[in-house]
Image (tube, rainbow, N blue to C red; front, side, top):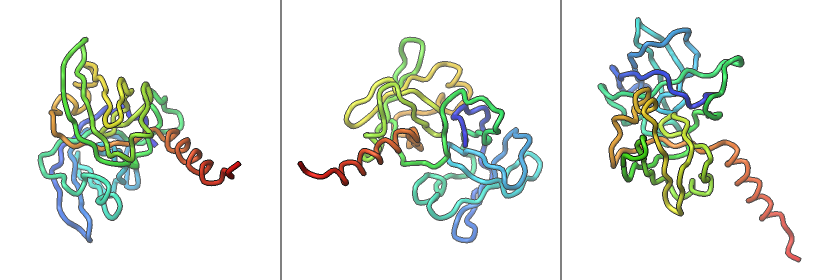
Length: 201
C-alpha cells in the first residue's frame, strides 16, 4: 500500500527481457529496502528482487505487462518512485494500491493560477470512478480531481509537485498510468450488484 506522495525519482539503466517478462534496473537513492520490498514505479507496484549499489532490480510479468506501460520502458527513462507504507507512516495523499486500472493520455497542459493544469483522457470504463474533488493516482502521484466531464478530467499541479515528481517534464500526448480511488471501485461494484439483484416491482 502507498500514499501517492512521490519522494524520489529514478532512472532506468537496465531494461531487458527475462523469462517471458522484463527486468528493470533503476538507479535511485533509496534506503531501507531489501529483496521482497515493494516500490511503486510510476504507480505500478513492483517487488525488489536484488540490488547492486544504487541500482534496484525489479521483474514484471503477466498482468503487469498487459495493463501497464512497464513493458515499454527503456534505458534512460525516468520514473516516479515511492516505497510502500509502514504502519506508522502518515497517509498524506490517499490510499493507493499500486494496481493500475488503465492507461490515460495527457490531452493538454496549461499554466495558470500559479499551477500547471493537465487535462487527462482515461479509458471510458474508468470515468464512473472519477469524481469532482475525488482522488486519483497519475503515474503514482496522488492528485485531486479539479474538473471532470463525460470523457476527461483535469488536475492542477503545484510547483512543489512539478519539482518532486516527473510532472514537470510531461507534455501533451504522454501516456500515464491511472489508478482510481479504491473506495470508488467498491461503490461502483455495490451499485452494480444492487441493480442486478433488485426485483422489478
